[in-house]
Amino acid sequence: MKLPPRVEGHLALVDRAVGSLLRGWARALPEVLVFTLVIFLCGSLLFTTDGLRLLADQTLAASPELIVQRVIGGRAVPIPLTHAARLSDHPAVRRVRPRVWGSFYDATRQDTYTLMSYLPGEGPPPGARILEQTLRLDALGADEVLVGRGYAREEGLRPGDEVILTDSTGRPRIFRLAGLFTAATDLWTHDLVLVQEPALRELLGLAPGEASDLVVDLHAPEEQEAVASRLAGLLPDCRVLTRDGLRRGYHSAFGWKSGAAMGILAVLLLAFATLVWSRAAGPSQQESKEIGVLRAVGWQVREVLLLQLWRGTLVALLAYALGVLGAFLHVFRFEAVLLRPLLAGWTSLYPRFDLPPSAPGGTLLLLLFCSWGPYVCALLLPAWRTALVDPERVLRGLA
Amino acid sequence: MATAGEQLRARAGEPTGDLPPARPAADSPVGPGARQVAQAAGLARRPRRMRPPRPAWLFLGLLLLLATGAWLSRPAPRDLAPARATVAWLGLTDLCLTTESPAGRNPALAEPALPLQLVPGGPEPFAALPFFAREATDARPPHGGRITPAHRPATAGGR
Image (tube, rainbow over all chains, first blue to last red; front, side, top):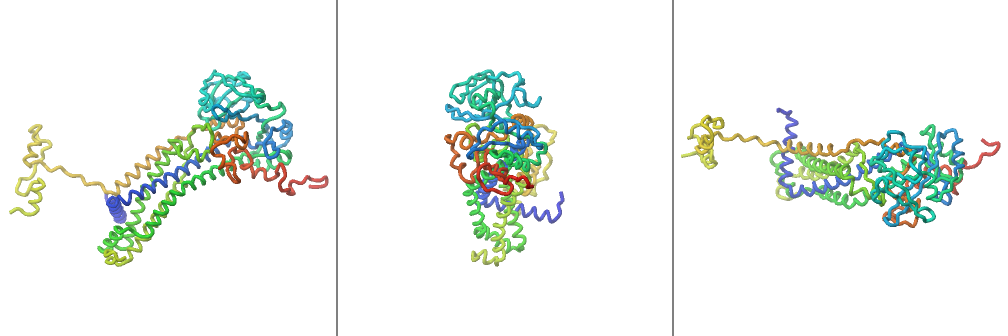
């Protein structure tokens, strides 16, 4: 295949750069390894953070627009159901649902589980595939519970087994496990124990006229911030959280944690910066000699710089490809096992969940230019200085 | 007297100019073993050596291989319908990624990440608590805080 002369010229330069790298492999290999490690860790961090943000966005889209909590002394306390009636009267409100929830600390296993209630008449939409068995929720008894897979695994439970929960007076209450949530809902239900509302009220010691908080659906979800301000004025002892606020909260939390993790990686970044700086400070004796020889046999400065450009590009591209591949495998195949505890927070029951494919072109380009750019500049600058010197002086080691 | 080139060829085992031209032996009709005989006699055609590929193409191939691996390791799009149905049904707002025990439930429960969490500006372990909702609650703090005109009750003749 006949290639245009310009392409053929660049291919010849690439050939020469590959040969140069293979000859000086002892110097090139550590650079590629450090470079790959930096790309791998930064890529894993960015992909995991982006994946968690995307996951939160995708699922929070279905959550209620407003959450109303009663606050006394800065702490959330049960809210009277009369507040729900007052909120329902607001013209922007479509529906108000009281939530009854709490937590159960299992001192034996040192795990904290989330207890939540549902009304027997209100089930999930048909065909939602959120439970492993097809159950009729309205047919479940008051002593039957549905649990997340993490809870069931931790307690070694199967459907039909007994579930023992302690109520607010310290008495054990025995329930029967009716079913499990599917793995597709793990991120939300992993530590969840779903109990019918009357039974959970007894467990938590919550009065019949109270709820843990209220969730509010609006006619116009895009006006949630404005409606939140109005409702906060309506209920002076409450705070109103918006879904967008939660979404921003998750974003900032993952961003904060990502920044903290980046701080931990700063040592590695510093090592990489030192490597780049040492390259920028001046070429090695072997490289100076190579440049001197090329200049002595008639190479132009431009050609020498092109050769160095290709040399740096090859190292950067190889490290980039290796690092991105490693980051993809780490994040999407091995569930970001190295970074998840840092980014996802701490809990005793980590859910297993697949991060969504969230490697946007912007992140990939950012990684490429943040790695390729400084490295190639660090190669070109000393090569340019050396190429401008008389080749004889370079070959004699005087420059 | 052999030339230097002929001496080098002879040392390398290649036919010199004195020998007859090599003949094809691969399809010899005389049967198996003829090729070995011909090679021993130096009559077989020298196997043609392929031109080695250019290093540039090899490098490009390596990059393509790695890019293909990265592409294949991307997960398939997930079915979010069950998770969304659960969230909508129960009105869930928090992912099961952090325990909310230090701030939302029992402050006495210690956890390893606690020193990093309960600090000013630190991430709140329970997303539905005030750190994340600051913007939503700025309009009217439940207790105390700065009083703005929006907080003042409207008078009978007011707006």
